Length: 226
Image (tube, rainbow, N blue to C red; front, side):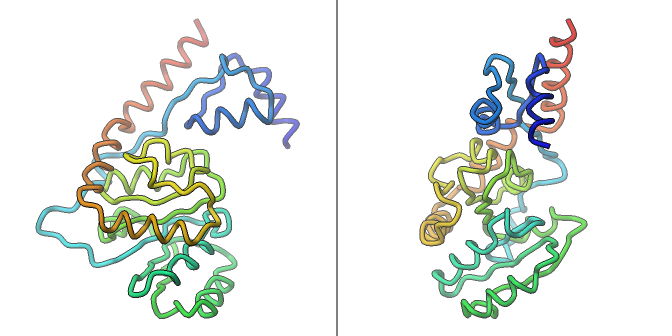
């Protein structure tokens, strides 16, 4: 599969990526000519994902949203939670090995502070109830839930191996090592104590609306065919 991917990328006159990180990885691993790489950010539905009204208060603490818990770094999130007495984590998403993470929570003695709620048909409803999103992903070219949380006015703590970290309002909101639970806990506490981060996140999300991303992609296609 790697060879097929490399051949496809090498033959393309334009390679569209959704983060600078993904573009750098193509150059590093496939030898892709940087001049053939075009950045088009993933867009986000700003109408579907909106901040809470002033009268609404969050009734959830930290939230993790994603399927494939190993790649998304749920183990690190649980370990960070163990360093944060009094904090609660809601885990939204599916994984066939969820029982392993339940046992891990018990070993860390945080099982009374973790709720595994499974798949969500409307992630916007869960994000609207949360205080902050935690996603210490091992690798993600651009995790859409990062953009969705930002559009909902929810601060995000992720890793630099998530290409969406490039649009966070502050670089310190992304940890360098996705397995560093100590750093994750420290940044989460800083986020929870920093005023107006939600508004700053929403403002950044408004720069990348879904319609704008679609138009940008069309422009790349038209240029390639010209």
